[in-house]
Amino acid sequence: MSSKPVTTKIKEDGLRYRSKVGGSPFVGNGNTRSCFKCGKHRTPDQLQPKRVLGRTEMVCKPSCKDLEQS
Ligand SMILES: [Zn+2]
Image (cartoon, rainbow, N blue to C red):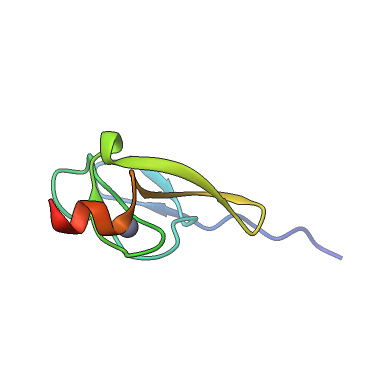
């Protein structure tokens, strides 16, 4: 019975990243997060937290459709 080691990636710049990111990789200026539902990248003010299966995921605000049409 051994505890699972946390996989840690070390980039050339020395910063460490935990491989905990799920879903699509970040693109753009790094200030965006991808919507849990539609996968589009949004800025923080275009996102709202939503409880999904006991986890908190970020989804479009007010909704994916509304941002799609704007
Ligand atoms: Zn969305």
